[in-house]
Image 1 (cartoon, rainbow, N blue to C red):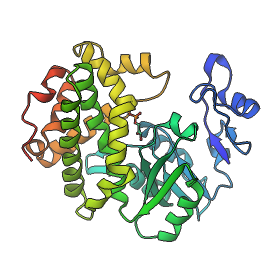
Image 2 (image 1 turned 180 degrees about the vertical axis):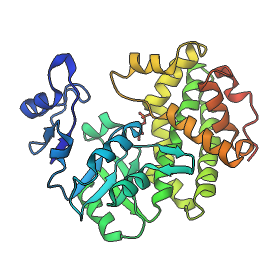
Image 3 (image 1 turned 180 degrees about the horizontal axis):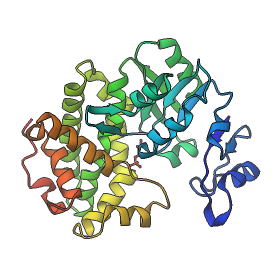
Image 4 (image 1 turned 60 degrees about the vertical axis):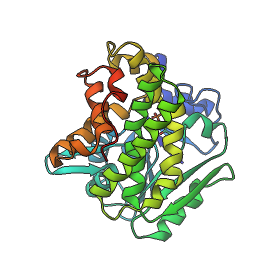
Length: 314
Ligand code: 13P
């Protein structure tokens, strides 16, 4: 298994350190990676003979990565957009999910994997579950289930690729709202209310975007479970908590740099992407939580407005 990555803490190449110690000292210190993991700083070389590709990068980098891969991968490759890529690209012609973007640029057979998957816990082999979303090809989805599934990582497949991907994407907006509530010390009742309202907006938004999205998907690991874990222990909630404690005076960018040791936050970017879709389609009034989170993130309202707006208009 080859890992494409090129970060370098303290001047040393992270890929060299991983290959020698079998440990990613920057992002997963103390966890031994499998003996068959090879880190390759050369993306084109890493994918050369691959027949299955797993994309696991913050969604802001995916378009550039795909451009570099055009013409470099085998014709019959299968790909999966793994649970770290939770976002969308909004173009003039409308929104594009990350897996569609990968498919459009590379023409590969793709699925998505999303779930309540805080990385450190999975690395420590604590129990969690995930959902694979597929379009038509159940056999391909089953291959991914077999590859990822272990007794402590339970994977199931559902035929609702857009629903699964939108769950993972939109819950990051709700997680930002939950972080505001934490930072303002508003209590568990308020946080639960935000999560409930957020789940409703996730469902309504997904079904408006893709009428084929199934209600049941929101009860899978990719839905309610991911929403809960992210709002309890995710990075979006953590950074939004600090943002609220600063009264909105410190920027998300500054807090991300301070709190995440080089990792990238997805939720704030997604909040802007979702807001763009609301504006493009005239849906602002139907999504008061999504709208308010964006307005707070951009500094036009204080974090305390999170529960001062009418959030029950749906
Ligand atoms: P964060 O990016 O907020 O840490 O999200 C965690 C997550 O997606 C868990 O599934």
